[in-house]
Image (cartoon, rainbow, N blue to C red):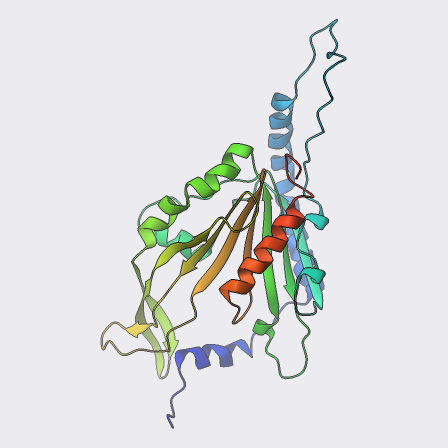
Length: 282
């Protein structure tokens, strides 16, 4: 039996010493972050709203025979998000925050891959957004990092930008189809410089809502750049689902050791919930 811990075991041990924020503190920080953005974003959205509203000419009224259009939905309400009843496991804590003018950030690693090649991240900018994290029960002996069941970001964009999220997916991941990431990592005996090969791809399409896709990063185990020695086992692929219903787009990431089938199932449930917010309505 080997004596030296693997890289994954090292990280797991270090995570046990991390101070995790209490739910109330997370919500407080989220509120402060949203409030700093709200003034500027509100002005921008107000101007955009003025340009989008049709005003009748003086002395004229809309045709009596034309049906009145349903008012467009604006801010995203909490009922458009996944609910605890949609999950197979019990939910202990539900953390949520809302924002304005946020980027539709699919995955930080994917964004870093692009910027490391002098490319823009490529994220579309939303009008309204709402995010949540659902946590499982925390019985004794279960590490904090394994409490996450699902993380969901739900965005409202212009109809054109919402469609463009999916039209640009292939071009977005193409520069990262074979991306070698090099950097320092903690290992037995100190820090070592390691390399990881990332393989980003659009794995599945069209299984939920108006548009849907699974993005996957099949990455290799980190290897010492000098010796070629693997510093950990091959990690589980990174998976995320992107779903569009009307002008709304949802990004879903599941917690520890979840499967693609579970992610697709929740994406279908998310699409159903998004009907409560979408323009046009389902």
